[in-house]
Image (tube, rainbow, N blue to C red; front, side, top):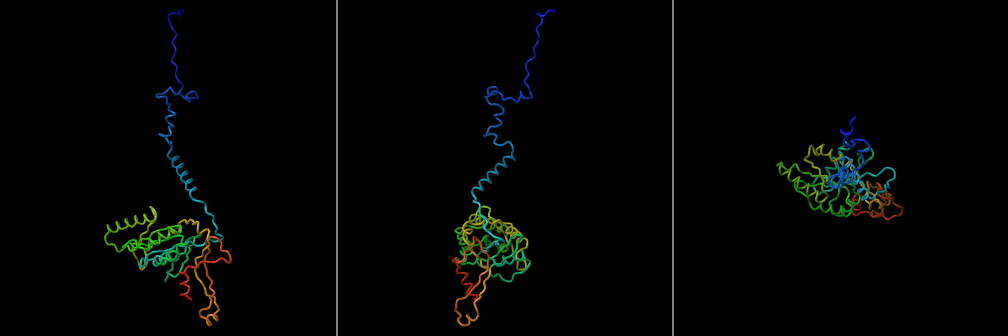
Length: 313
């Protein structure tokens, strides 16, 4: 056998394509530029997230943590059945405040309200009651009303625009903690031109956003049918009011206050006949809001309520 004339051939080395040996980290100098494929894939600037779902989840979690840090947790001091939420209807004269309250009461109770006198309490859900009240147009009445309002409905005459009463009321709201605010545009059925109506809506909406915040809710009441607003438009407004979440304001949770629903004069008739200007005994009925009211604490009664009281007695 001639072994010197013929050399043995050797196969070239083939690197592993799979298995533990193939998963070993390559040396830095083995690739072009000294960067491996693994380092390229996990570049923090070029490849922030490998999954869009994971990115959305992390972003929403970061936003929730930030909002939780900004909002101080409030203590629920209500004992037993909670008081109804107060919906204050404000606007200049002849804009439709009483008619809006009548339409909302008709929507919730299926009964016609002949006249709006004082606060009106209705049941809007299994665990929610609403109390509608019309805001007076004088500045003293506005100051008294914003102290207990949970939601303010600003009525705006679409054919005229914003009036001074609306700006005064918004200024008073900002001073007292700024509760929830929604706008209602009325008298837009006076427009005959569709293009002019569209431009007016756009202009009033952006002006309303400038005063409140971008994206504030603004409803439109197009006209009247049998002396009431359209059922569908009232239904949309009532639906937003029924599901709205009200955050308690810090000043209100630390101060007791009562919105009087009704009052009774229990002064003996004999004393009134003897002296018409004698001291009267009056019982006030209403829900206590905020913290507890201590016995013997002095209370501040608004001037507007005193005027109403003396006019009825």
